Structures are given as structure tokens and as C-alpha cells.
Length: 56
Length: 297
Image (cartoon, rainbow over all chains, first blue to last red; front, side, top):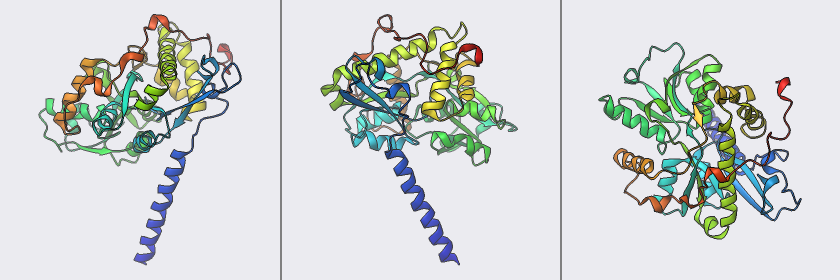
């Protein structure tokens, strides 16, 4: 029983680890948001990525 | 910013849930720049990571929150309690260190627990901590949801409190200088715009709450509106040029608290050459696009 609980806990930790990693590696900006709109010319010459945490 | 970029640059915002992943993305050159807690940026520079602080994100905007029904009424009452901090390398941690010293406490008299900022409110709600010290909107969230009470705001303990700063990779500063200049000018213009009408209706702050809540923070606009308008001085977005004397103070405290190993020159981790004169910056529009009419809100 103990080994099953241990195995379950290890699996949960592994899933959370990879989920956290995946979420942080995926840019989660919204295409419609003003800061990711296209430049006025319609042509994107450069891209510049700025990270943030939702906190002041 | 992208729609008004003179260089045809698309500025993209990438959201993180914790500072360690953000730090890794910056050092791995996945992102060009980031808003990060000031002592963590200084620690990166101290570790030899080529980055510079180019601007501040805001002033004030942090608070110490305890449970609504807690008997904690002053800082001294926190002795023997557990308080969540966003990171060892944060000014919130340094403020706790300084306040503990001022009130005659020894290290360890308050147990400081590192918790990612978005998890602070739930940690208090489930009573896994007795209080937390972090930036908004996580303080107002606990107040609005009825289980938290602000014990003290940082602006009352450390005026003009600095939390997050804009950190840019040196390679980007050297190779894409006009873009960094455009970014910093955009941040300065946004800050000026957020603060310019805060005493006269604060329509800009209410507009920003809708856009940021829906498109960036994934939080209720009502929460952000309360943060930005209930107490107009709770957070401010002007006066954002990195001040040498404030960073010297942070450096002294960091060395004393043992989170930085040695003193560094201001120029080795700060580049203030991008900071514009606020008289020369302006938002290129009156209202943010995609908002309902004022009267309907």
C-alpha cells in the first residue's frame, strides 16, 4: 500500500513538473491583444519578447 | 506598442508563473527582456549573467496581508508566525529583514517561506501561512474575497518602494538598441498615461484594468480596477528611472542579509541611458482600442 502511495506521489510530482515547464515555455499572449497586434505597416520586421509575472 | 512601432516591431508579452522559470528563459535567451524583482536581477548580474536593469516597472504596489480574523495588529505581532515572500531575492524579503531588525527580532523569529506570487492568497486562505508580503493584485484579491486584511502597505514602511524592474539582456542592448529604446519609451508613456488622470476620474486606469485583466493577467477586471482606483496612491507608474541611491540601499541590505556576496558598481547592473524625459513621451491615442463606452461600465 505504502509503495502505491509513494508511486502515486512521484507521478503527481512528475506531471506537475512537466506541466509547469510546458506552461512556462509556451508564450501565452493573446493574438488579439493590443501589444501583439501588427505594426501599422502590416509587416513585422522584428519580434521582441518581454516576460512578465501577473504581479506589480 | 506593436501597432505604433516605428521600427515595425511586434512586441510580445510572455506570462510566467514563477521567477525561477523566468530567470531560466532570460538566461537561455528565450526572451529578450523581462520584468523581474530587483534583487534577483542584481543577483543575476553578480553571477556573471550579462543583463542590465534599464527601467522600473512601477513604484509601491505591495502590502503585508494577514488573515481577516487574525489577532495580528502590528509588525511585532508577527513574531513566531509564518509569512510568505515571493522570493529570497526580493525587496519584500529585504523589507522583512529590515523590519525584523528594527523591531529587535532575531533571524528566524518570523519564518519566511518562498511562495510564487499567484499562490499567496490561497496559502493564506488555507492557513498554510499566517500572512504574506507580495505585490498587487494578490493583496486586494484576499481583501475582496473576504479572508485577508492589509496589515501595512509597503509605501508606509519603505516610501517609493521598488519591486519589479525591466531587465534586458546585454546582447540585446548592444545589438538591438533602437528596439530597447522604443520599449522603454513605450513603458514610460504607458506609465505617464496611467497616472495623468488618476486624480480626475482615473478613466485610463479603469480602461487598463479591462485590457490587462482580460488579455494579460487573466484576472477579473473588477479586481484590477479596485487595485488601481480604490487608493490612488497604492501603486504608481511614474518616477521610474532607476535611482542610484535606492539601488545602493538595496545593495547594502542584500549584502547584510546574505543574498548578495559582494558589492557591485551601479553601472555594472544598471543602464539608465534609455530612460526618457517624460516631457518627450506620449501615448499615441486617447483610449485603448476594444473597450466599451464609458457610460456602459
